[in-house]
Length: 503
Image (tube, rainbow, N blue to C red; front, side, top):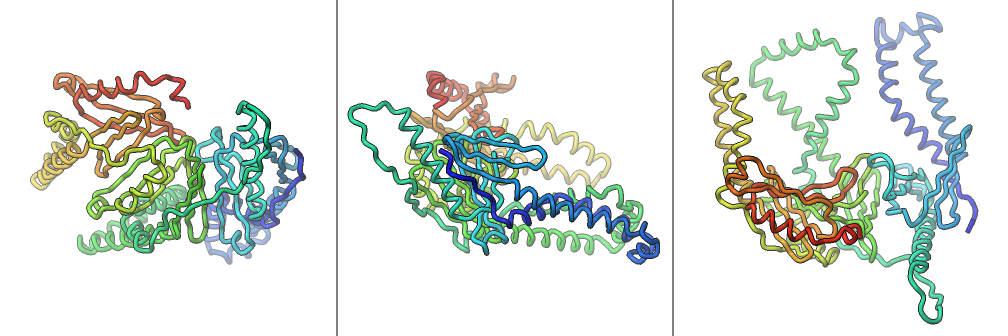
């Protein structure tokens, strides 16, 4: 039923302006960096008359355009509820309408930025199973009040309840029962400051920082004077290996400190709550985010441990959810960014009582141990030969990598394993980090068994189990197992009907 139209908060105009500024940040840097700071610098602009002021005129025009377009977007954006749908209308010259049935909505994700909190506002992202691009929401309400966000959730629950009543056959007299829309939530976990610091200091965010800087600099490759940079590097290398090594160390430490700060800001006050239908994850310092995960969409659980965290009994838990992602990328939903295994298991047992969390794994046979490192040694052999030949005799030190590769292969062999239950498959494997998947039989999309020529001779096979997760899916692999184990998993999975798989 039509109930009236709602508008976004006026702050949306400013937020649209800021978003446009972010997208045009790089062109601004290029325009002003190339035109203002060349020649005589800023003073040259005023010496050339109005022609020298062209960069400033272009910049001001772009800012005015962004501001006006932000105001227009806010003025023309309306939403309302009608016929069990969330309906949105926006656009100035071309009016666009988007109708989203409430039964298709998987989750409403909330975010509170630094401009939202003082005004009691939230940004709402509407996630559906059929969202278009990777990580892109079906619709986004830039800034609305908490009351309006709750109204959308109530309308969604009301529509879904009405749909379930229509699908349920009515026997006997009809009783109209008012169903409570607001479900009681229970807090299961709150990350402590100690866990947050351990997460920040042991994360791999340093690689993200370095790659982000490299990508940023690559945008200016046409303007970088490589000859001058090369001469400076050659001059710097003359200071000696100790100074160079110390400089590299300082740069890495700075990147690590930045990654620690980013991790703390992103995961501050990490909290897990749940009700009968959904899991709610809240986190963030500058921008507080709330993500909801429908329990019926969870396809599997992955527990990961890098060597350092495994040594101290910590783990990361990822929810493999159909169509589930975080942010603007196909990023996996981390149920626990970092948690002690002893604290994690009781919470997982409460959230997913149908899963067995401590199964007895079947390991790989002893005769398959060389499969875990032999191929790596074959790939590295040309590198060993080239380094040894061109940098002889010091290049022969590269052979020290051989025992490291063998030790890692033995470690992987001892880690790999699987367990079969009546309704569940557990698969464990390792690269450097250890990963363990817990998957219900009805959630499995594909089971694949592969054998190389050498594996067939030894009666060995590798097992690949794929479930639906995000846009690309997730695959659990148990490599170089007994051929009989692979056959047993195929037999276990084969009788499962296609009709049940889709449920």
